Length: 192
Image (cartoon, rainbow, N blue to C red):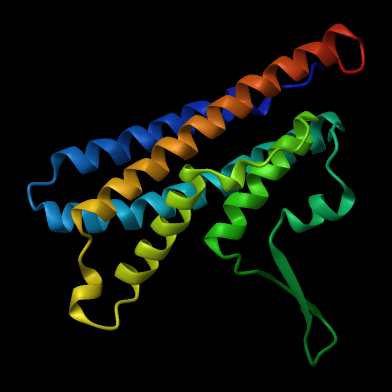
């Protein structure tokens, strides 16, 4: 069985999710509510797509026994699980909380390792700064301590949209580069 490139499976879901998010932003007549929802849903969508990306990579790893440069520790950590021994001696497994910034950063680095793409500094750009600010905005409007915390200012809405552009371009660029890397591995006979 030939290795399935996770990019092809992830792309349809990701594109649909992002299209829906942009459409939501366009259709809201109440711009204040629309901007607040956009910020909240943007980070949630990126978190979900980061988890989906990791799941697609893990499926490919399990199915085709190919993991690129992903270490055993990376692979185990990718499941975002914790274990606790109960008083009865039984093991309880539960989902670990992973902060959004760490999850996005891990998923992109995991993708680089899977494809064997040399690590680069994706996280010192203006786009990454916007992503971090968007996460802060989302946290503020989701957990307000005062009424004005629920407002997303027009310049903050621009920051959120900039984060979406950065994330979309970064994912697509890495997938394009990764797909080329997979084809080179196929051509060299290193994978089926």
